[in-house]
Amino acid sequence: MDEKGYEIEDFLHINRYGEGPQRTLMGGRPRCCGYVRGNGIYRHQCSKQGKLEEGGYTWCKTHHPQTVVAKRNARNAAWEKKWNARKNAIGAAYARQCAEQKVCEIAIKCLSQEATFDELMEAAEELSRLRG
Ligand SMILES: [Zn+2]
Image 1 (cartoon, rainbow, N blue to C red):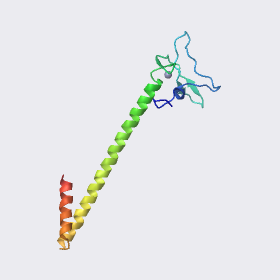
Image 2: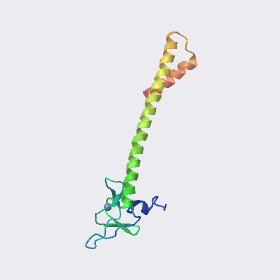
Image 3: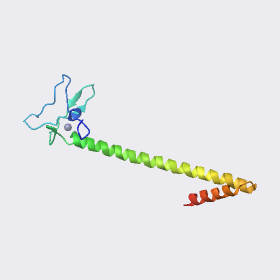
Image 4: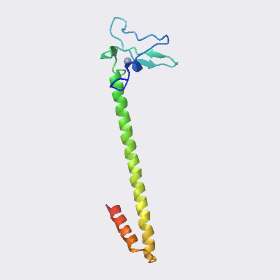
């Protein structure tokens, strides 16, 4: 693995005989060295023209390793952001529920005149936190 965090070889088409990609299309234009999945178990070499260069090979826009990895990272980052927002929302909702429950418990004690001064202070703090 290099400093980019991936190997060019992972993106390269290798056929069932262990042979590397064909470098050119008919007519001699550079061919994309990436692979596509077919219906079977074997991968096929992409048939598009290679327009971008990386690692000594040519790639179409879809299979250009740097682009593929950038898209994957962006997708992962977006997912993580969404997940964290959800986790925080759940955490905040749960904290609020706990605070409300605490205030209710102290309020019940107040009504039956069993609350201590500390409990009243605690309820006041929880209430101001809930309001803010
Ligand atoms: Zn391609």
